[in-house]
Length: 551
Image (tube, rainbow, N blue to C red; front, side, top):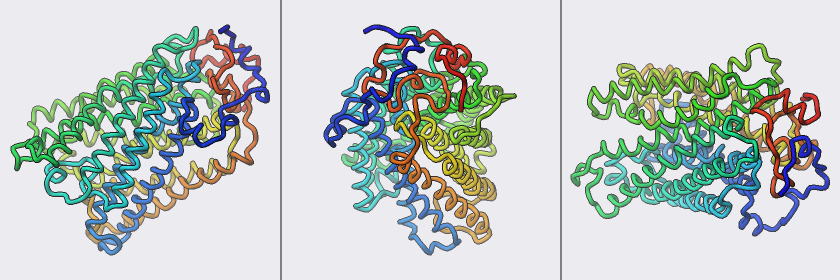
């Protein structure tokens, strides 16, 4: 196949291009597809349904907490609802959201490749995800599970009479989907880059996905082994974790958190990659300290494996171990801080375009920073003892996961929606949605920091009357947040039929994905592009594209 320059790719005529949306309309062509773009869309629909389901359980919990008495849900039902909310949101939404959706769709195009390295394995990963999701839905229909999303032993191995085995089996299956996706991304990044696309010319989203994939490959098998041993102990009653059988429950916590803290970075590293793409696009500037931002992703992935026991400061580990893990927990904040400072330096004296993706990313930077700073409180041994298992932990975790990962997912969805569909969404409605999400989120979770510091424990459906005002504020915020999340469902679907045609590059951004038609053709490019510019080098790339900046 011959090679072309960026200037040649820019002038593909969209009307002469058969894209992935207008061929093979049959259902089976989608269910048997090996096209990375279609698989990304399948993931988008799948995780959206799980997000709605997980959000339903969250809203029911907030309605219960409007009043101090447990007058809406029983304690058993409440236990099942917060367990299912955590399991669905973490294993079935947050972990696969940006990697499985945007990584699948955008990564090969950013690399100038036709597809991922292993298209059949990519389809298999989606089917494994769906099998795990159906197992989870079966558990919900037949009675649920009440162990919390962490499945702590010995409660999960001996005392719980709910569907522990089915739930852990569903999570076990989904873990293999994550492993296969990470493997596919790593091989693709190493072996399928376009000519001239050297490591230091890669978009920072690719660096983030690369670091995420390393964590997926190294950490997820540990979770699989842990859940398998838990299921084995529950069925066969061989002592592994249960002290009544001669097992060690601390061993379970060590193994579970050895995966589950790096899993935080599976969720947040891709979000950081999205932030770099959007900040560069809407400031028209090269990311300040590109190499520092790129290598900080790898540093986060590495250091993330060394801090798991800060979840266990009150579990009975030695004071010496706790001091070491406290120090490491402070140290892991450094590469995250590098990213925040470098994004801020990029924004400095920039002419910012206040489009919807940028609004979401500005919200992401602020909320993630609050989550990171409050994480330092939990890394301090004395403070951690005071706020462990309180709403302070709930607020911190949601500032990282919802304020960080979900805000960035919505930013990515709005940023690449014109490329995915070929249509623009109504900008006014999208900005309103971003504003409602930001306001609703802070009204929901800021009061929970205060509740936790005052001593309100998490995972209780009833509480002391003096906490009611703050809980009412939190539930009011959750209602606003729900509206903010619901709006995109309507206007994005509306845009598929009535939205303006997007064109090749509606944002005037740089990157190979903005040099092909919207939506892209089946094999992404008619001819292999050749990259001769550095990442985010707007002057060089705009000159090569033969166009001026226009948003």
